[in-house]
Each structure stands twice: as structure tokens, then as C-alpha cells.
Length: 492
Image (tube, rainbow, N blue to C red; front, side, top):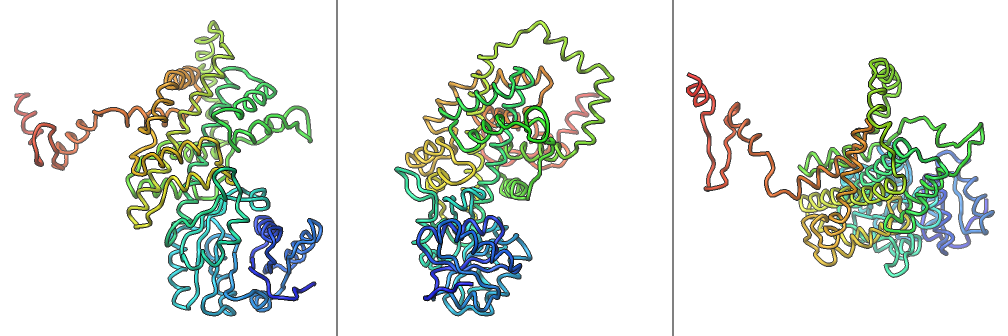
């Protein structure tokens, strides 16, 4: 295997597809890179790809010692291995050969507290550590991801020149990377990014369901609709790939592939972590929560098949069909309404994600810049969208913005679309089609915009059965009422 005449600039350990692609991206940008994997066939495969894809300066090593010693000091090594125990094992293997001032970067989807634990342990050995969120999937890793590094600022400065070139490049706003902040902030931001992604995907799936089930749009029509949407305010990676999916024929049978895909969604945990953190921090994130619940319910395929039989035999489908058989659906109007509903609901999902990041930043003292996060999400990542430019501008206008919903521009956009949004949710309910993400987003908006909500009754109930006390709207202080005694006396 060819070895470099000089030491390489950086190393990468963990050569599954993401690792291979990121290594090739780094090499293509002019940085000679050493690569290592416990299964050595992956090393040879990566070096072979580097030759085929332009004789790129990628150098493979079969043992950790020669791998580490091939990198110039201070050494920088990116790990792309499965979160959890494999990360600790890889750190142990590599750190045996590292020296003071060297740095390890974890590029996986890791729980932020694990990153903070590892950074502390590494610093005791005189080593630097970064937890870096990497978004964009396999294509992004190869051609330009969105990068979210957090941890040692010194470590970031050691690799900044590489990251600025490797990250996705967006005209007018630059490379999609920035130093996020201290500790596990990079991993936390990537986790919430994935939570927003869950919400986005669920809302798009609901738009598809309404158009298909109520509007009876064919896959050809759906492809046309989503392609058209991708030219306007909804322009984004997820809308683009959705249009692509509707156009792909089944290579193993008749019809379209999307109709043959089992309706059971997998997940790897970042969405669940996001919802758990929202609960811990008392941040309402109903759109993201609804998307997680939808995935849980999708997993109950066998139960849903049986439930469908039960309710079909009870005549529910017939009742719902009879209610609408004399109501023709205006396809053009429905498509326009669903587009508006999808956009308004998306604003709510991003608002929830940004509020969660802000709450964690305050708790941990990270001083995260929400506008800068919106900027680095504009390219490379899965949730990249033209709409993120509007979010960046909203936080530029007011860095202390309480909620995206009250930014003057977003507030106007929601007001302009709220009638269509309500029509879509009502239509879905009447047709017996669930739109949990759109409905949860609408409830979030309607609750947030109201000066008074029925929480006064809930607090009164809490004081009645548990003497939890309550505050009043007309005077200062904390109050308790003997509700039971008064009610009992009034019944005598």
C-alpha cells in the first residue's frame, strides 16, 4: 500500500460509507489524509476508491500505531464509528499512541453528555476533543456536509482550515460550519437538527396522505406538485427528494416503488432524545413529539392491520365515505391549501427546535447563536431549505426573539396561511385521516397566540385535590382555597 513521502495533515478512523465519503471529500480539497479501520478490508476499499475518484491523497493503514504516527503534529483524527461503546473503544485504541496537544473529533450522532465526559477524560491526558455533528447523509459527506463542531476551541482552530473547505458552500452566506460552543453543544445542536428533521418528514408525509387519500392524486400528479412546490417557499432538500421518490418505478414489479415500501418507519434515537430534552427543559415541542408518536404507531403494523378489520366490520369506513360521496374535491384548491398548511406547520416545528436549543444554551452557558445555526443549516444538511435564510434574518433582526412565531415577517406569513391550514386539518378529521403534526402545530400556534388559556381551571383542580396553591390575576401572592369544604357546604 502506497505511503506518503511526508506526514499527512489529518487522520480518519471508521470507514463505513460516511467515513469513506468524508475522507475522500477531505482529500479532494487538497489535504492528504491517513485512514484506518478495525476491519482492514474497508481500508483497502477506501484507498481503491481514492484512486478511482481522481488519484486522491488517501493513505491506508492496517494498524493503529502506524496510522497515528503517519499524521503531522499536533495530530487531528476524526472518528466516524457507532455511538456509545465503539467510540470509547476507538478512543482507547488511538490514545495509546497520541501525544499531548493531539486531538480526536467524534463525528457521530452521540449523546452530548458522553462527549462532555470524554472531553474531560481526554483533557486529563493532555489531549483535545471535539464532538462534531455531521449532517447531509452519504452525499453530503462526500460533496459538502453541514458541520457542527463543539468542545475545545483550541481543537477547532487546529482543524478550521480543513472544515471551511470540506463543508457545504452556500453563495452569499459561506461555508456551512461554525464553532458551535463549548462541551457537548455540537452534538446537542445536531440532535435538535434531527428532531426538526423528524417533524419536517412527518409534515411532508401528512401532506402526501391528504393529497393522495382525499384529493386522489396519482404518483405522477404528486411528483408534479412537489416539483412545483420546490420552486417556491418550500424549496428544500426534503421536498426535492420527495418529488424524486414519486417518480421512481418499481424495478421488481408493476407500478411505483413508493407504493411497495412497508409503512413502518425506523429510527436511531436522536428524535427520542430531542423529545426527552424538551420535557426535561419544559419546552413545548408538540410537532416533534407528534412525529415521534407517528413513528411508534407506524411500528405497530400487525396491530393496525387487525384494527382496520375491526372498524371496517363495524361500518366506520362506510359512514365516513357516505359523508363525503356528494362533496366533490377541488384538487387545485386542495393542493394550494396543503402547501400553505405545510409551510405554516414547518414554521412551528422550527420554532420549537430553536426554543429548545436556546433553553439548553441558557442552562449550560453555551451562548449559542441561533441565527448562525440557521446559516450553517442552509446547505449540506438534510433540513437545508431556502426558508432557513428567513430564520437567520429573523434572529439577525432580533437576537432575543422569544419565538419565531412573533417575528413580524413570520407572523404575517402564518396569518396569511392560517385559514388554509385550518381547512386542511378539518378536512382530514372529517375524512378520518390523521394529520398529527399539522394539528399539533396548529394547536401550538393557537395556544401561543392566546392571552388567556384554560390553565386557570387546571390550577384550581390542583389546589382542590392537592393544596398546590394558585396565583390570582388581580392581586399579588400565593393563595389556597378549601374548595371541598365550600362545595360541600353549598350542597347542604
